[in-house]
Image 1 (spheres, one colour):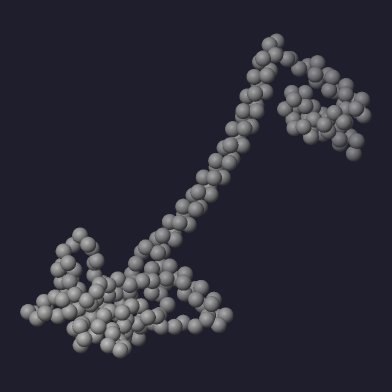
Image 2 (cartoon, rainbow, N blue to C red):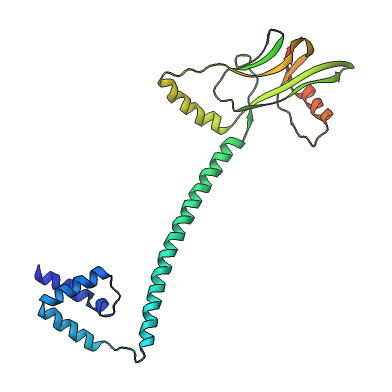
Length: 227
């Protein structure tokens, strides 16, 4: 064990003599040198072989450069860690945004979507797990085939998040006693004031003339309720 200790001390003696070791290492070397004559002689020989700069300022400058390098290395590690964390966070945020912003219109199905009259009001009901939201407008009076009618229109949409992530958590909750229930989405208006309700995808672009929005609804959407 003594021989191994001496070998270790002699390996780090050059660093010790150059004063670039840590405080703990310096104390360990000095403690060993106090009890080991052979290592003290080795240290003296090494010290005699060291060529010190003539100008003390040069040696001080070297020590400063070494400290500067150590400080730069630590800062670089911190910066790399922060950039890695920021990259991971950006991927998570980007993925979450994509899963919530990419929308798909849910096709009409009478088993999932229904318009019902209750106490003179028209209500929209939805039964399912993948619905994320709805797009629609309040009843509007338009001219269809020369006849004025008041219509309402809407559609439900899903996102990757509502299609894949939310059902996963719903199944977990269901296993613990939760139940899937019908969802009352909104009131369309008075039943006696609405002639027809349309369902289907349409653009709610406020920069587009309102009559064009209505035209796309009456031409491309499906009538799912009539008075």
